Structure formats: structure tokens, C-alpha cells
Image (tube, rainbow over all chains, first blue to last red):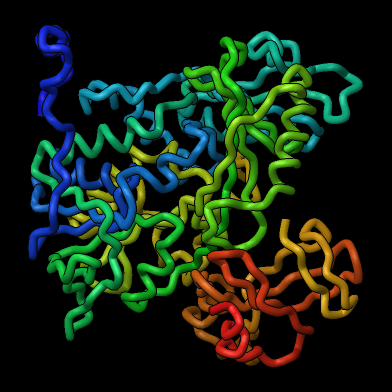
Length: 417
Length: 100
């Protein structure tokens, strides 16, 4: 792997940029690994990277049925924030925001992290009370978040309509300035490149058919399209397909997979300086560096693996965007797509051990997994390496659905579900 | 847009008239005080989340307001059948025969 720096850039410019080495080899599976990670999205590749870089475990394979980063890592709206309500969630997501700050430097790969701020608009008295509660809860935990008046919202993001006679008037907003966006593909590529440089095998286009268990119940390895791969530990990070993969090991999960749609507009000149979310009107929006508005809202209401979703939701999303930003109501949309999100009943993820020895799960990120990529990958790697959770992910067990110790961000979070 | 057949109204109507109500045929434990934590977790939270034909509930919320059951393929989103609440599960093999 050639490092990216000014010297190498200059050197390769001399030869017309034709001699760059490949970023990572397209590996074929070996017969045995210390750790097999199922799913080559940001979370899986990141976990492999941290296993290699922080825990010295390099005999690792990341296996994906499609191409690297082709699932939800490449299908989200790239929003990063940590203004959650509960202490456990704040610790987890703020850990991630901490790691985002220096990620490009650590990976020697530009993930284009831009802390342009995330503004959540309040449209009702209840919104105001709820968001102020979030602001206070965040500040108690040292998480950046502050309250803005409607005029301050308008100043921060000029396209917002703060007219008093709007159907959903803006009554204020909660601003997290450390929040922002990053280039989602680059996150997967950066982690893949970093992991491969440390000896991790990245095996694409090779579906895992089943997880195989030993007679004593522990994990033996995985059956794949390219044959059986023996593994001391198996970690599953397969997003929408977690239920199906884990079912082959006899583990049932509290998940429902639903399509989450997003769409982008035609590219325009810079007009939208931050991320804006409106839960009451129900949509969120930012502008990519290419100039497209990146727009999303909630999931479709039904279980589906179609990666498509229904048009009524798109209509609803566009209606919401036109309501909050009337200047965009004649903007043409270029593309829309869907990703399959795995949702838990309490809308908090599950990262940890399973009832099967040496089988680990990182799932249930629902509609909010991208922002957590570095933090999730980091604590997941710790959990796999030490066979016990990191203090940050210790509350996010699968067992909480038996004990009742839920982390109920579903009802209370500033999440646009 | 999904078109959904309400077995009570006997009409096929757009998805926006209906609300999804998750997996069907999950029976509430009949003896709550004797039910273990594991069984409560299973009843309350664990879902099969099938990729393929899924038994599920819908509610005709902007129509008759009644709950009914459906079998839908979660890969294609195609409805294989809908039937009234309380009726037994239809046999999957007879439903999927016509699709092949």
C-alpha cells in the first residue's frame, strides 16, 4: 500500500498517475482464520481494522455477499451527530464523533468529515420542551448541543422558512456544532485499505450461507459460496440480513428489516450550510460537496428486503422538505434508492456477545448506523478480541430484551423515525 | 405503491389506507404469572423477520378499521393472500405454487 502524501503524489504525477498500487487486494478465502467478520460495510471493515491495529489480531477475514460498502454504508444520508437522550447512547455516539475528528489522519485516507453542524427544528411546544430536555441531557454529559431561537436558526441556515404563519412554524432549534457529514464510500474504502495493509483478507462476492457450530455449541466457522471457512470467532455485522444470518446459528433476534429511502436532487451551487432535521414535519436534508441536496425521512412501515421502498413515503418526504424550505419546491430530484435497516424495538443497537460461544453480533442500528461507524467498530473489535464488552457497549446487550433493561431511544430520542 | 386487499371490505385499495402491524400469529402467553422471562422476550420482541413469504398483520385504518392477516413476499413485496383475523394460517406451498 502506498501512503498518500505530498511526496508520493508528486512522484506519481511524474508517471501520469499510472503506477499507483492497488488499495487492497481482492482476496480469496483461506481455510482458517482467527476471526471471520460477516458483512463488509463500514462497521465490519472498521472492526477488522481495529482488531488488526489495536489488538494485534491480523488473521482476519471480512466476507461479503456483494461488493465492499455496497449495502447501507453506501446508501445512507451520511449524517453524523451524537445528540441522543440517554447516557448510554450519548456515550456510544459521542465516542464515535470523537473518532470521526481524526479519522482521515488515522486512516491516511480522506473521509471528508465535515463538522458543519446539525440543527433540529422544533415546530410545537412539545418539540421545544423535548429538544430542550435533550440539550440539557447532552450538556450534563459534556456533549455539545445548544438552543437557538427561530431568528438564530435562520441565521445559521438561511433557506429555513421561519414565517409565523407557516403551517408548522419554527419555534426554535437544537444545534450540535460538532455534528456533520462524511463521505460514506470513503469510510468503507479507508477502513478496507487500512485493514488490508495489516494483513486482513477482504473477500467480496462470497455469500455466507450458514454459521456452523461445534458439538459443544460453540462456533466452528462459516459455510460460504466458496466452501467452508474454519474460524475461532465469528462476528456478524450484516445490517438488514442479520436475522437471516444469525438464524442459521439458531439465534433469534429482536429485529425487523425495513427499507429506508433517500433521494438526491440535481446539483446546485452551495446554498445549504449544515444538516437540518425536522421531526414533526419529518424529513432531513443536507447538501453534498457535489452540490446535490441529500434528503431522507423515516422507514417504510413494512418488513421488506426489496432495497426499493414505496413512493408514498417519497411524496411525504418531498412535501416535508417543501414545507420547511419553500425555495426548494421546484428543485428536480435525480435519484432515489433504499437500504434495508434492521430495527430493534427500543431503537438502540445490539453490540456484544450472543448465547453461542465465540459468536458476536453488531446489529439493530436501524436508521442511524452510519454516524456510529468508527465508535461501533472500535467497541465491537474490543468485544471480539477480549470476549467481553467495552464499557461503552456493555449496556447494549442482546440480553436486555430478556431483563427489560431497554435503552428506549424510540420514544424519546431526537431521531427521525 | 402496494395495493392491498381488505378481506372485510372485499376491496383492493392503496397502501396509504392501511397501517402495518408486524408479524402475525404470535400468541400472547396464556398464563402470565408462570411465563418465564425468556418466553416474554420471545413473545414481546423476537421476530422471524423472514426474507421471503411472511405472515403479517395489517389494519385498514382509513377504512373499516379492522385488523386482518396477510402473506407477503418480503423480497418482491407482492401479496400472496390476505385473510380475516382468527382464520388459520394458509398453507404456504399452495400460495407460492402460482409464482414459479
